[in-house]
Image (cartoon, rainbow, N blue to C red; front, side, top):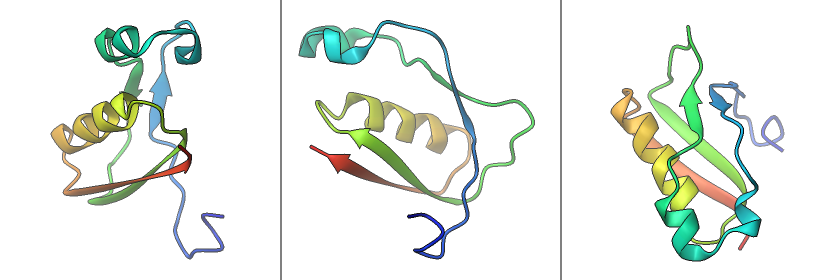
Length: 83
């Protein structure tokens, strides 16, 4: 999908182990510390399209967006496959 749209793919995020968010309530998901981090040695592009599989509360996408912006990304757009 990414290549067909003419975008390049860059694997920039790592994830710490945690229980599946689908088993958590909305309040638990919102209170959970973000499990994602930017991998070492990564040079962030200035514009990023963040693709998420499922949008439930928006907490994950919003937190990762903020993480990327704080690390220097100028523009972060999000796209979710399912809501």
